[in-house]
Image (cartoon, rainbow, N blue to C red; front, top):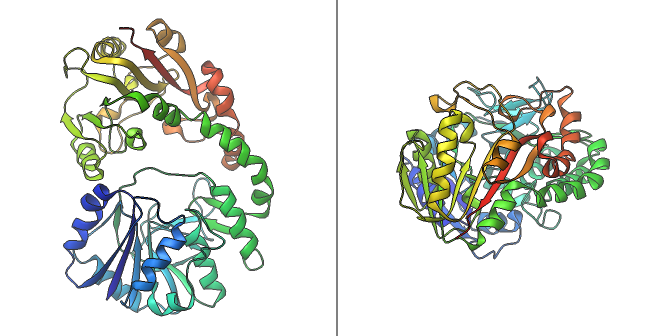
Amino acid sequence: MFSVVVVYNNEQALNRILLPSLREQTVEYEYISVDNTKGTYKSAAEALNFGGKLSTGKYILFVHQDVELGSKTWLADAEKALDTLPCLGIAGYVGMSTEGSNFEEGVRFYGCGEITGKPLEVNTLDECVLIIPKAVFTRLQFDAKMLDGWHCYGVDYCLSAQEMGLKAYVVPAFIYHRSLGSNVRDLLKYQRRVYRKHKKYFPTIYTTCGRITRIRVMVSPIANPLLRISEKLSWVRIVEKELKDCESVLDLGGGCNSPLQICKVPYLVGVDLFDPYLEESSKKALHTKYIKADVRTVEFPSKSFDAVFASGVLEHLTKDEGHELLKKMSLWAKKKVIITTLNGYLYQGDFDSNPYQIHKSGWTVSELRNAGFKVHGMNSWELLRGPRGIMKLKPAFLWKAISVITPQIAHYCPRLAFQLFAIKRICN
């Protein structure tokens, strides 16, 4: 039997995503929820250890609040697979091995980048789903002393288990990780701690966030301050700051993972035309209200919202349609209009089975300024990235490192940036 342990800070997401898929399971399980909505626990390791100690099942499933189990027989199927694994220390759905290759990291990404039909041994696992036998957890718990934050606790556990003679596996138990966004603050700090703890046995550590090596650890004290500067200039953080005085926001073309999810807006209306994105966003409870509509034809009364936001929308419209939308957004907003778009035209066909993803236009700094916007650059230099923001220069790891410092330059020199971030303040 499974003991299911979930640490949550978003009760709506828990109730809409994880719990419905749990209630459908065909076998019994023990459910242990750890409420962190008030920040009671200062680290993932602390919270998970608390839940794990309460468990009585044969296996403990540590799962994120935004994970949906892929079938009604998920727990039953997973237990059957786990029972066959020799020297099982920990298992999960997504992991990195030291063999094979993918386009950037030189390692194999099992469970997501490559779907596996059988259990496979890996170096480390992603932390959205971790399964640990209760007998193992009794001997080895998460390192709450070293990992006093929210990163690398799963990586550390995988390595510690292997040093005990146990193994880490990816199992073919499909999930939907309906991610509520990522937080990379202090990631390098905890990667450095994990490397120092395990370098004797693992001179290179392969993770879903990249390889941890001696060189990376040496460079990280330099990279960390640069990352903090970049975070301060992050357009998402700027949006969060800009919306603090807004009670109502219209999110046009918000898709399935709107960046506004980090903003505590009392009334947030999401508009999209693609049903799968609306369903996904609704499950995550990212908006207060949803409207299925085409941004080109939807209408609202004048001054309906404090702010109107559109991220990555203009490039999917013709120039005439885009200019018309900008005019409407200015009419609907009481305080400000905020947009992001690519700097110039970049080809993109449909993807995600979504025909609305095709790019039809490109926008310049001058055009947006002429429309009344103050324009900043975002997401590194334009010459570094290609379609969908993928690094186009090789070797990718080198140019990724260089890209860490370019957002600061791009922010103040938008003509050099890959994307543009623009704000128009409405004068009443």
